[in-house]
Length: 390
Image (tube, rainbow, N blue to C red; front, top):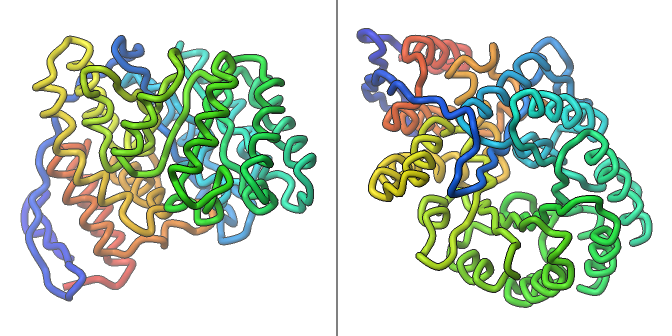
């Protein structure tokens, strides 16, 4: 790849051709270091790997703690709460529980300093040899206790072990009924679709979404006083609109739809979704500007701020969707939030060079590259090391 002018690059495509890309000056995005009035908004944050550690596939995660926590401060500065130790942080895909527990504790302390919200994932991934439903309940309870003790709100994550052991919807009800009776404060329930984790296919006891939804809704209605909200990641706007209208009063729907979030958060005049999105980690300044406009009742500006980000988000989350973390870490690297493009589990290799080039093009169109010269230099370095030269 060659630099043909100041922040003007020749970039490759998937067919061996080259095209010119001129990087735009970034917008002077306004910070918003307090929560929003009209919506609750969490950004699901990634983790930064220690580049000198053995963060290879199958190895325990080792983090660059300074960069990882600095990225959370970056999100707090734009008014977002942080959804911690979730799938965006490579939970079940490189981030083991011992490190996740330390991450939750450290992040909760940073959130307290910033006066920001934090909600963290509790699952069953520290016991990989679980053989009974009772053991699933016990494993969940251990992690819920750890999250609560850290000072974070609890997100009850979907469990691979439960999905493997459950033979009917009754098994799911038994687990969640017991957990919701035990929690100290209202929690967020997370329904993660199999496009994000194929091991969760058939969650809630059925591969038929309406049948699974009926089980899920029954659970929420029976425990509404213990549930702050539900986070649904099925990438179906139609399903989300239907579900949120059926939720009990006071139970929020936190959209996890990285394909359709602008309309879902805006709402239909009767109901709206709040947000718990991995996409917001990638587009934080633009999402902040949009939510600030929504607070002011300026729907036109809200739409204008988020519209350009949708193509970027849909590209980052394209199939196989569970590799979206690579795009988020790549953008963080381009924008100077971390020194290297290295991920736990070696997942920096999960997306192709043409995919990553398209990420920078779409981020550029949104004017989300904080330092175009740095982004140009880092992209040049990446392509040269990959043997992509003109």
